[in-house]
Length: 295
Image (cartoon, one colour):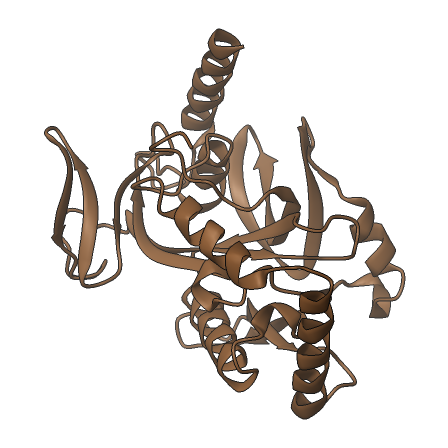
């Protein structure tokens, strides 16, 4: 295994509740009130929709995709959702500092150092909104690929807090059989004082519609028994995943760089408006050049 390279679950596509739109040459993140499932192919007009998006939207009320049936790939909650405080370099899209509120790994001129992590609000290094909670959730959608996943990325406290709690609870009540629980992602809305009564949307994880918690746990036990009898070693899969994630100091993918700048770190111009077009343009050229050089 190549050291320094995070081995993450294979990704077939992306799940988002927003998109990046271009207005007058300026790329801006725009929230939505529904899910979108995209492929990993991006064209001038944006990411191409995955066939599952159209398939699931047919049965969705008013064509709004607000629930997605999913299963977890791992029994360990923290393997499915990795959430940390992260500060990215806005020029390269690479992580510079990653912490959990207690300790952090920070890239310095002398290498990566382990330092105390006070969190975004108290950290001098990441002040000014540069450090944010950053969560990655890998889920299985459909039955087309045994180990392939779709990834949902977010910097939203509501989504990260809710998903972390649900995953931990379902792992506990199922007796550690989280990978076999029939679940679904559900889009929820809420208003806060900060949102000025405008609805904000976040992602929740619930038992598949039409089932009780007891029925879901019973199905998970039956499914786990069946898979074990068929020779599938879920514990070994979790162990392999943990080693893969721990193979690098930072979980980083070159393909994420542009998305991070696009969606989470729009630049601010002198007049206070958002403009990350020049940053993204330079970043795209840099990544393309690297890929051409490496073949």
